[in-house]
Image (cartoon, rainbow over all chains, first blue to last red):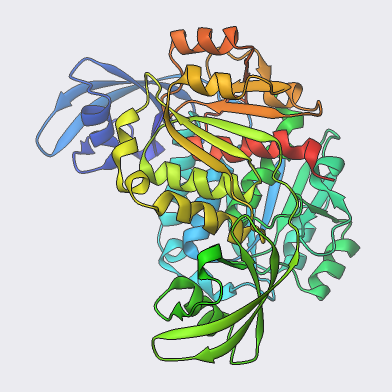
Length: 237
Length: 237
């Protein structure tokens, strides 16, 4: 946690002591009354918090807004719905890497039913986004949708300049050879067991180019980080 | 696990039933007597295993060697010794991504004492390498050293053509701008809290260029995957 993020509704209210964030401020950062810490509002401004009181069950703080955060990168991620523990990592890392939208889609070889897991039926998915932004010292989190069909996601990313799907089997080009042009990017990645033939056809019909990351198949969450690293290079100055 | 890997000493001997690998062959892959599965010898040839007997407490198999695996990429990783759970991910992902050597070094802001954790005092570190290779459908694993000083690691990677250290504070260039020339690569990454001033000087004296991955600090293990993805592009065809 490189910055302590609050929801707009939490500003001006005491923060319970048993929360990650109050522990972080008091125990990890070692802040006392009067001390400042990096803080921000989710999808809002970044600034400084000041500890104004420490009680057994809560801390109090003031928040001073100061800095408009840079926009997220114009990168959309389309991912086959997969295991909750994998989705957690994707949510956190893709947020930290600056992705603007994430669409979890049903795929033939994936497990659409995972969208009924606790990760998705509670607010936990959003906590992962906030944790990713807090790691990345920023306030902005991506929009996330689940339970989409591939077709629906394709329609939502239709205007991207670069559309690429990671694939270990039928890709003729490495991702590095495709990346490089400016403009919005859509990156599609199947679940653990990849795309079906029908899905590859659908991706191609929607002008997605199939690309690989080399001969070594990576775990879904690792391939996504690797793919985002390569594709986001054009936005990093 | 995309391939079942064996140590040379395990070939021709029964495999206990309670092992990950026998479960994988019988339960996950659903193989019966006479069925074949992708198999290989750690740092040796890849080929096919055939199940020859299934007992309550063990399975028996034959292994047919066939294919020499491609060399690992000429990429060395120098990493500040950090939390065992972080090192586990680095070991597994860096192996899957084809790194040839990993040096864990003591850094001022890291925790050299973590090298006395169970990960390092048992064979568990090596199991992580084998798991990474099994994910990547290959047999080759990197050489790993721990308890080195930064100076010792610098000496071991001295001849690399591209030497780069990830740094969020004093880097003037993005990694993408440095990557691209052919030849051996050394990538250095501090532990969670990064490099000290003295270490930055030491890195610069050893011709390491400081580079960043953008304005968003990533977790150590995520930054390593992102850095390796960018640096290995020149070796991926």
